Length: 65
Image (cartoon, rainbow, N blue to C red):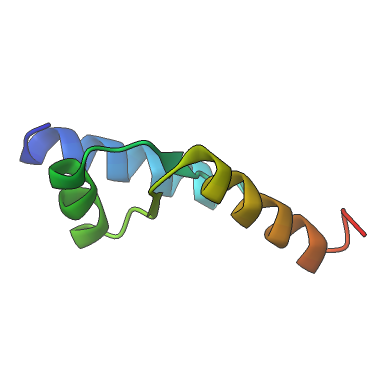
């Protein structure tokens, strides 16, 4: 992924989050992860880690007990 790809993905994430959609990315290659996180996109090392984060968010907002 080059710099323009990172910026396009960051823009898409920001648009979704502006609409109230939480975006969780997992399984991103290390080099790409660093590029994305440098531009403010949150990533997770594994899908189970992202799922646990999603569950935590749902517990905090009262959707899950």
